[in-house]
Length: 267
Length: 253
Image (cartoon, rainbow over all chains, first blue to last red; front, side):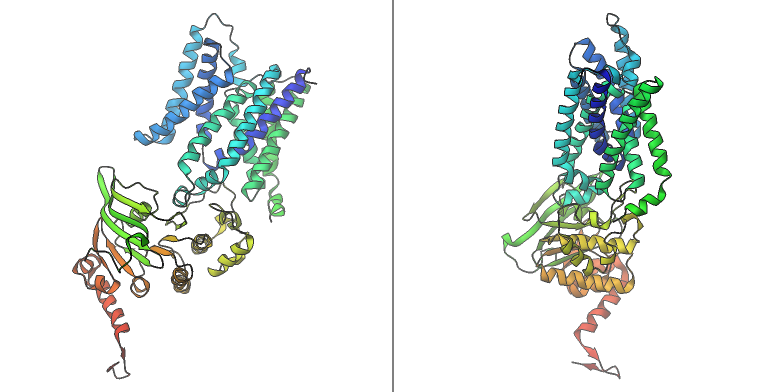
């Protein structure tokens, strides 16, 4: 059944949406939207390196994004610059270094559009394998650090005082974020991955009054965006990555129009 | 005057600070703090704004690592009521969810503890819709529900109405008896401090004076820091406990 490119795209997209849902919730709760952007922009550098040394794209993106993430954590403690300035610094320097390196790689034909916006329809069996295995691993780790990470999200001091080890789960979460970008970069692309990370949880926020509900609704919203987006892109012959995000946006607008649902879902 | 409180065995303490201090942005926020909290004991920190009360509490809780001296802890069953908790509104959180954030408890226990602070009706309320006083009550209920050995309360009754304040202080007192836990309290309520705590530490970047409430009240450093007015309020208060007055003002035993 994986012979059909469309089925492969569906399976891969659904896998990504299941992982981005819960992680995206934390991205919103912890106000890390720009952090997601920084990580995904640095992924460009990762992709370039993967081509230069012909290693696996996901692996090299994970390493580069992970290093950028850890760099940010340590810079935050060392410099007097605010967080958003540091994020901009890292995002734009890594994207610039990535683009300059691409310039040197004249011997490789390089689909930069595919890199920026993803190419969900060129997904291979191997990619599906990476997405589902990597995604499961990410979700399992998230499950184990969930209570600690959640406590740290609500209040760092409370979590630290009551033995929840917030520093450790913060670092692990950052690496998981790098991981989710690594597995989905080929599908969604550098520019739009933060969209898939943010929009489904944002629409879920409109409809939920407790964290568990928000997580499940954002998974649902993400999967719906991927499925509807892929079918629409097939129907209207549009680029699949952006179409998925447009569908997510439409769902988000619909969620804003349903204010009464909020009170109905309570309790 | 700086020597610690009533007699306990060396191993009895839940947490012990020895000459601890925090250095930040090229100055000492607080320095040379030595204190001990033991089971069933209420230790109070008092001091003006910026005197390092919260910083000291954070050292006790191991949220901040002391830059000198030592912090020793004998318990990991700790509960904390922070001075400020800003829950981001992007996080949909009910009281029900908040009560469980650092450890699972049954719904029955949850209701029981919310009842103690008088907010059991708010169990499914959205945290962001609570008033300041209601939120304080939830925070205290959450901390008590953990059945801690060491309870650290940083200005726990801020924003609570007058009657509620008295009730909550009584609750804190009764908790220290019923759970036999050690309590470190940061409080401005001089009456509670003087009537119900075992040990008072007067802080102003360092320990100005410490000891039993009555001895601190007489200490010149304390009077210096808080002014004649508070000091006289205190001596009045102490007076009240020493003896009572007859209708004609005569002192009765």
